[in-house]
Length: 502
Ligand SMILES: C[S@@+](CC[C@H](N)C(=O)[O-])C[C@H]1O[C@@H](n2cnc3c(N)ncnc32)[C@H](O)[C@@H]1O
Image (tube, rainbow, N blue to C red; front, side):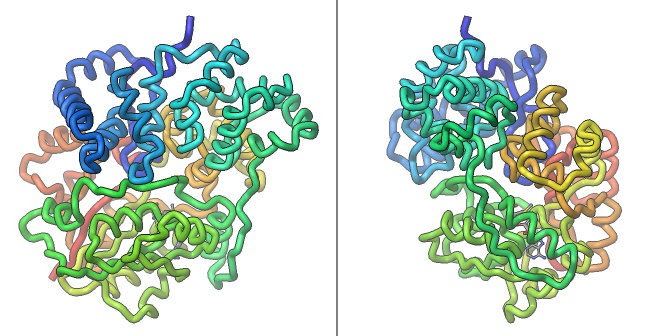
């Protein structure tokens, strides 16, 4: 009986979601949620309409993007009817393949073989174009798929069968390069690797050549070194067409939201490997976007992935010294960075200093309350958290957590790469926020909250019930009450749009 790769709605929130966009998480089968999805007619209808639009116009970039985005948001709704669309889009240079990380495996669901029979599984995978493409094009972020593929990788190695399965062996090499060699393996496999030099990189891919320089502040130096060895985030391509413009998203913040000039000057502070910067540059094609980053290794990845985006400039620069760029910015994005600074409020102030009057700012930072789930995962890892971080330590941490899953962590997309696990569980420096601290900081910085983003429509509905007086989500006290009642809401991050108070 072939196993189901995924067979239930997968919408539980995971710790890393917010930082990486909105990938839903992967809880184990849950009948209540399944029932909810079956009756979740708006999503089902939206997906059906997008699939039908794609069938009528498969070359229409907007139709392709819409279907891909919907499959990303609700991979649990994918089924065999979506396979032709996924097969057509998975290698499409204009489409982000990560949108199929889960939907692809879900759609393949009823047919993949049993990891306990790795030979049959290998035969099946070797012949399956879509399965090969899913392994090659994007990080595998599905625990069941990882389990199957790890079993097959082990069999190929120990039985010396890589030559007989060339497509699969090559795809596994590529997958390890993407995920940094995140999948755990045992001593028998490690010993066998000595005799399999051509397959070694399917287990132990080459780490990036680190190129970090010196920074004066010890925290800044340590943060640059971490991202130099484990550049973040892990991604391959961004959608060429965006679902909405930057101007549209600002207009959604309310009637008093700033209106961007025709050719806005935009800053992305702490751009990492460039995914956020590229998507902003595409959402605002008439803008000039400057993205700054500490880590030269991360920037090298960003330069490669963002090549050809003429309105985006990538610079090595410490955000504390952003004023040295000698510019004012109409829009500043800073996501997942402030909590890694030695003094987050000081870094935030440096950004506010270069915000044009009438400009807007989007920031995202860790919630101290939601991060308690990460603390629980770290407790589970015990002494491992005291060791110097290495890929072996990360694989061992993953092995422990796979054996005793903590869904908020083990279902998150970050759990499936070494760089993601480092960022999620082993960061060298975190100084998390809570809502009162954000309120104090915005007051001190002369900022007003334009919109506080709730992660899901369900959260927004619950917030409306709690705070009907606050349709734009601007009431810090209500937002704080909401988080106290729903402590994992900001498991990704707090995310908000702000403007100068006057
Ligand atoms: C968690 S990553 C977020 C990357 C990106 N903003 C995103 O959301 O995809 C944090 C990034 O901030 C960068 N960073 C940290 N401190 C910085 C500083 N003082 N100046 C510039 N970049 C910094 C790190 O090197 C790292 O690449």
